[in-house]
Image (cartoon, rainbow, N blue to C red; front, side, top):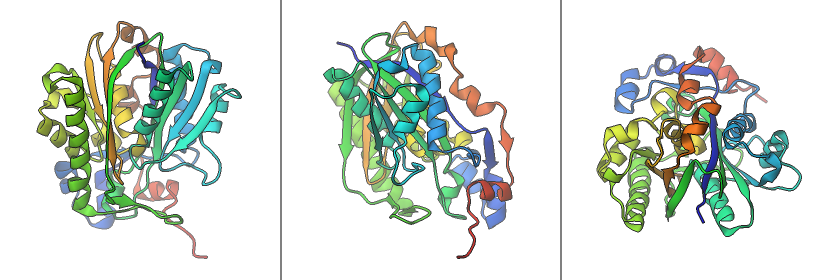
Length: 349
């Protein structure tokens, strides 16, 4: 029995802030971020946008492509490291907004930047086990970066949603693989406003060890090689890392480029690799093989191999394309407005 993606969708805020605008305030070297890390700008949520609202919009786009009754969705899982509530689920709000309640299982997932792929992995497993007919997995974040920190140049906002099932498939999931260790490269304790990170340690042995380890295991398990794939999507904390990881594995820049959104979007954390996958599905052709590996600090990677079906062409234009959302109707903010929207200025108690 084939299990895979029935519908997919993405959503991101219209607001943007350029790397130069942030660097100007802190007296930093903008070219080092633009050329060294391949960052240009990032999305910024408005005061009325959060992980839940972004997730709802992404899920609505997924439903437009899936063309199923929301009441048939048996589970809604939202992966994020910026859930709006410490004690109240995001999943129930999303399910209610979509019309999937009350006969639905909801859960919120956390695993740094791979909370979205974690939700995808579990929903896929639920459908494959036959416990639900359709399941919805979402990766979304309104990421945080301390003022002046390197993360501030990339921490952005967006969401990607996937409905998994066994019929009306647009992409069959052919293989999965995971790779995990306890590597403390990035963390945030309770009551901390911003996360901490291990600087260069977040590249090696964190990001590259796990992404490469997962990818090599997935290639070995599937008996495939990089040249078999039309597209490859990797977690993108910046524009440089996914290119380097892909090329170390033997993928070409052309295979990686369609799903590499960070230069103009920023790092959407839990939505990063799932968001890249939506951009790939927007242009995939029947029969195309798609390779995807996520990464979450702490640390681990989930890998997926998808094969696009004949139905992919029927659904691509039923909702907004990710690249269209990325490039159209943008609103550029000054650092002051950005700081206001992200509540970076706090009153003394």
